[in-house]
Length: 298
Length: 319
Image 1 (cartoon, chains in turn orange, yellow):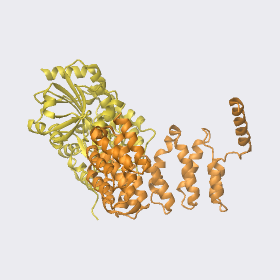
Image 2: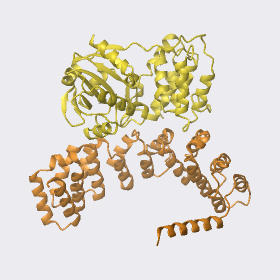
Image 3: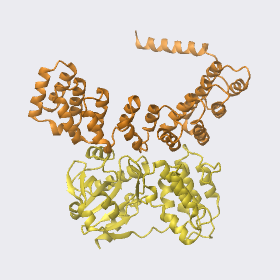
Image 4: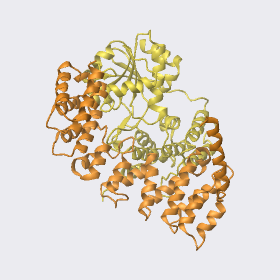
C-alpha cells in the first residue's frame, strides 16, 4: 500500500474512533459518582480512565484522583485505577509540582493500607524514586521487625532498586540461607556486591545447586570480581561433566567481558575450547565457543 | 525492642545544651565521617543530618555551622536536609546575599520533588515552605558585612606512614604505590565515587576536573580523581565514568581507587565521608592540592570552576 494512502487511512480511523468515544469524564462527575451510594467500582474505573488531564482540568482532576486514592471506603480496584491515573499525571512534572508533597505523604501512609494490592502498588511507586521511608518499611518486614507488607520475594525486588544498597546485609543473608524465589531475588539483588564474591563463587561452583541459581551467581561474580570470575569461568567451560547451559553462559560471559577475555584469550585455552566444541552436542555451547574464537582468536 | 541507631542519634541531638559548647558539638556532628553516621542507610543519614541542622534553629547560634549550611544549600537534593539547612539559616545573625541566593537556588532545585518533613513529630511543613520561611525571616543583625569571605585553606601534612601503606590502581588497571604517584609532582586530588546519585556532587566534580585536566595538559601537575568506593569502582567502572565526563586520561590525569590502605588514606586526608552497609551514605565535596613532600592544602571545591583560584592555590603551595 502507498505510504500516503496508509497515513490517510490511519488518520481517518483515528478520527472515527475519537468521534465514537464517550466524552472525557469531568472531575466533578467522577467525585460525585465516587461519593454516591450506588457506586459501582467497575464503572468508576472507566470514568477514572477517561478523566481529562488537559491543562484546564488538570488541578481539579488530580485533586479528585488523590481523594479517591485516599478513600479506604472505595474498592481497591478503583483506588488502583486512580493511582495509575496519578502516574500519568506525574508525567506533567511542572503541573504536578504543587501536589507532589501531598502525593508522597499519601503514598507513605498507604504503604500500610489494609489492602495488599494497594500496598504493593504504592511501594512499587515509592521505591522507583528511592523513597527512604518505603525502603525502611520493606527492610523491617524482611528483618521481621514488623509484619511484612508484601511477600518477601517482592520486598527484595523492590528494595533492590535502592542505588545505595541499604538492603545488602539482608540480601546477603537471604542469598545464603533462604529458599526458592526469595533466594533467587536476593541473589539478583546482590548483582554487583563486591563483598559477596566468595558466596557467588561457592554457589556457582556447587553442582548440587540448580542451574539457574548457579548462572545468576556466576554472572554476579563477573560484576563483583572479574579475576575470580575468569578462574571460575575457565573451569566451568572446560568441565565436560557440568551443565551445558551453564558452560555456554560462561563462555559467552568471557567473550563479552574485556577484562576476563584479556586473561583467558590464549591459544591454549582456545584449543581446549575447540576440543569442547568438537565433542559437545549442545548447540548453544558450540555457538558460544565459535563466537569466542571469532572475537578473540581471529 | 532497641531503638534504631538514627533515632538514638536524633534523641542525643535534642539533649545537647544550648550553650556555645553545645553549638560547637552540634556543628562537629555534621562531619560525614563521624561515627554516628556509620552503617546508616542514605535515607537515615539524611534524616540525621537534617535534624542536626534543624536543631540550630532552636535558640542556637548557627555561625559555627555556616560552611555546612552553605554546602548543603548549594548541593543537596534531600528535602529533609534542605529543610534543616533552612531552619539553621533562620538563626544566623544575618542571612546575607550569598545565603539568600543559595536558599532560592535550593528551593528551585527541589521544586518538582518537594516533600513534607517532620522534625519534632508534629505534621510539618514542606521543605520549600521551610525555605520560604527562612527567606522571610528578618536577619537578626543589621548588616551582613558584604559578600562572605572564603575560609582560609586548611594546610596540613599527610602522615607518610599512611600514604606509604596505600596501593592504588587506575582506570587502566595500572597499579602503583600512592606515595610514588604523589611524589612524582604536585597533585590536584578530588574525591568522588561512581555510584553518587547527586549530579551536583561527584559527577560535576569529575566533569570540572576533566576540564582542568584538558587545559593543564602541558603543566607538571597530577590530576587525580580518587574513589571513596574502591571495592566497587573497578578500573572498568572508573574508565566508563571518566569517558562519559570527557576525562582526558593520561600520565598526568587518572581516576584511581585504593586497593589497600584505604582507612589510612581516609584518616590522612581527614575525609568527610560516611559509609552505610554497602557504600557511601553521605559525603562532602573534597578537593586537595598535595605537594610531592606530602604537604597538603584543603581547597574550596568550587575552585574547580575558577581557574584564577586554582592558579592562586598552585602559586601558594609552590611558595
